[in-house]
Image (cartoon, rainbow, N blue to C red; front, side, top):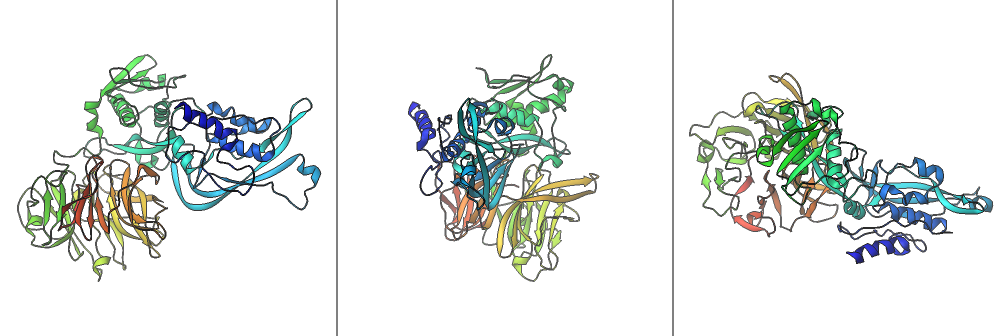
Length: 609
């Protein structure tokens, strides 16, 4: 490790990523994905020319420089006081290019001897705002200028310093991934789900190791963002149980479980106003937020207020707040056989026995089906006929006749009719009618009754091809087709009005995988992650994980598999990923394994949901 740290010092001493002479080119300051590399900031050397000042400043931004004290030494006295590194972070595809000095016709030698300007350019792919919220972008040109002046630093001594600098950090993707990590903080869905409160993941990015600005470790940064409240995008549909103004006790910079795996969280006196029930819900927010962050499993969270311990929650009691709490058989999978019957595979491995037709009319095959969606309690299923025209809902527990269809599409072509159905954690059923004469997104409350049309104001002429509801019921993943391209978008499900007759809409659509020019299949995989099948511009098909905020998951691309038509993932990320392929039938990918064939014949395989 000492060798790695030494390399960090050498990088900043002048052999690193930013060029000082010759052709301008982008080279990342660290190796991609290597979060163990630590870069140390080095102050500007005496008599450094402007180009070296710019390069040193850019390098220093990629370090863990405490309070950015060394980084500020590249700035003028005024800029040193006003620069806000904690503002928006700009993420470029590669480390920024530096070019300059810029010369203008009106420049004269006297001016160039005391001030100069350099330009930073690159391809912007994302931003992280002051709420630590990640926003992916379609690649766009980035350009910013740095103005430098000769500043007097001592009597009779002047040095080049940057006096005009944009707030925030500018980082290449590899440095961003080295310095930051994605974490989920948790809030409660507005309104009870089946009579209970459900936690919703709100992804943000925090610094690996210690944050230079707050001096907090990763766990403490995460709790701090949790207490600050949900990100703006999720805020309209979630609540926090922490009383307004609750924050960490002053001076807390490190949080870690003790040798009994008990994590104590010291809060300010604002937390004292919470009742016992609300306090347990607060503790659940902390427990879910931190359980993947610490090296040791957190078995118990204890919240402390201004006057001592407020409440505690054991990990064994936390599942009551989970949106993906399913039935005892939630590792089962369902698919449609070559006769159009719905069958069930018992067990996640797919090799625990011969698939069996489900109980009820969907298993009898009186009407051949083309797609299926199973409620999360596995008591009912919805299926779309093989023609795509009719949507049926049926029991999976009792025999009987197939009821009349609940939705019928009037489109002439099968591909313009009903999408595969999807159930949310509230027990509501969702389906899209792709009829060009009247496309619509429909919700059936409780999976029964008259379908309700859901407004989607951000479609802008695009058509919904496919949809998948999250377990928490407040997010929907949509495949939207427009101008011959199909993209993945995430929308926020807002419910207004009474609980008996709510007005429901999908708001604030945001593209979740802008690097993929065409997406063909999606599935939720856990609380805030999706598995996506798609192609980059001019590329080949790939299967990869994408976070709900649009950032690339740490898991990255998955092993290759040919001609994938659909994918299915479970709420439990440890269960196998399934895919339907053209040549190999239905295949599975278990953690740490390669793709294996499960069923040579069959289609439309799904997990409950």
